[in-house]
Length: 192
Image (cartoon, rainbow, N blue to C red; front, side, top):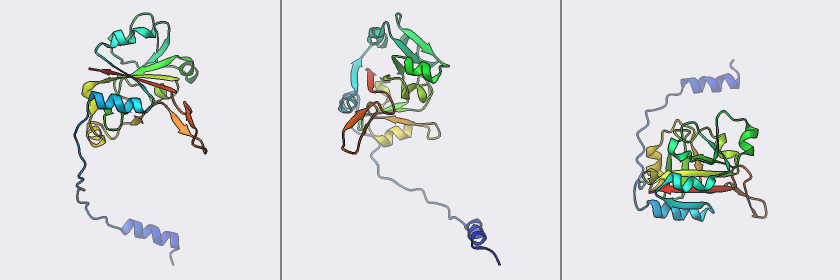
């Protein structure tokens, strides 16, 4: 006589899952959005937003700072007068930096969210979680109107990090605390 455990496992092995029909969803894939809505929504999350046309000019104010960058950031972003810290870095070195400069995979206008997937100019996840200041460059063509549109642009097997404002949490009395599990300051350069 089989034990209950063996019987359950046998039922699982014998189970046949019918072929699933594709689920049709009525999500709005596109819609109003763009730079203005994205900038407004990101600012709602207490992030600092700059809409600029020239990245090096916008980064010139970082002179004298120690900024971490992924190994594949565009060379024109590396303005003179900044101590650019390149990987590999220890956790302590990341923590002692003044901030991190990254790009993004996609941004979402409806929600004011930035999505990182570890791709070009984004680096490993720790780069954007340890330094106290995250400066993210978002090109206008990377801004999707909605979450479904953004998800269509992403590779679902990559490690996705969704960022909506600086790190924040609330305690039991609903007091907002920033910087508990990530940067206290999120600054976004939207390139038009």
